[in-house]
Length: 489
Length: 99
Image (cartoon, rainbow over all chains, first blue to last red; front, side):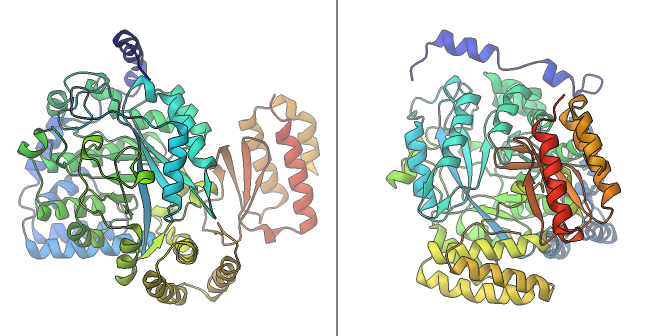
């Protein structure tokens, strides 16, 4: 496990391929024009009611907004209109994805890191952070622990370090996919890792990566520079085009994100929109598969997390998430267990499509069932079990989905975006949610959750749009009851 | 069928070109059959081209080679015999199809 500083430096020096940044620049510039964003925000101050309502109507037609429109929503100060926006966010989500909510679990694999992000507990200078990288046996043990709770979807997380290079990540994916526990297994494994070259991303593509997720953290150039003073991550462009390279490598589900709390959150929402627009422009209308919007959370021995002047309060956070929902109506949106149960209850209804639960972000902590803040990147806000959160969702009429059918059936990239934009994906999402929820209830749920869940399944069966579909799903449910697993449309 | 003519020339084509040719042929031979093509990467079936109109509840997917798969969105549009023949020809095409 031990590498000399010279070895690490040698690895660091060959990671960035300048030509794989330059190929995307236009006249030497990237697509985040700080002045344009600032000016657009300024020009769209004090929007009138009718304009906001026109923009809401456009979102309800599932059309992506333009920067001027998003800026107008961000600048709205009328609470009555905000209530209309919250409602519209929920309607849009239901129109595109139905009443289902996708569950996943984060699995931290390694916290060795060569970077120096001042807000991160994993930064290389943090001596208090206990470094750990899982072996493949330990990865398998973590996966077995997660599967035994009912999980089917993971996001594996890695620090940037030669010990966790692309070959290690690929090996991790192979281990995750080949590990079985009882009747369960992980069916989709997403990756949150450092930006890579196209050649490296092809390696991850070949082992069946789900979504490749890289967050820009902050889109504001100057702030980015200040907060990432050294290391590979100091290169803004290498990170900004990480997902363009993924798309070129054939990984056609990518996830963008911004870390709220580093800079003006309105600017960050505009950055997320500009990122979406550039991906759509260059890749035949295919933008991000998901958008994430984590808020800065306290981390061990990391004072910046408490003193940043841009920390976002709960009320503002709800507004920001709503504007993202309205701006990119057809894209998945992820709200993690960083947030408290109260915040999640308040925010999920404005348009969130994916959440995690039963999460433990300590490295190796699922199999040992322990919490150790010195091995974590930050501290979680929602520590409830998967079963508890699923039950609460069911009580509020939201059906849990562990569906992973799309990427196993050729419904990816252009095809997925096209049907999502037409508001048709829920025709499959809801049946597949019912089927995977049934599996969960039979194999993992508590008696209490089973009761609530079975009622919800009956309700959702009745709500399916046609008798033919209802009969197909009923027949599949019977097969699941008889012991078959992994049935999907 | 025309596919047999394509089979005779398959060695001339790359996998991508073969997908194009097969797709054109299938559209001509079975105009009502909606198909999608996918590149296979582990569990991921990444969409390449094909039917983008509506969703199917009875789609059938077939692996034609280690890297290429086809999804029949409305398999009922052709007879079981035609389907068997078509899939056999496609598998032969793609298993040895790279030029």
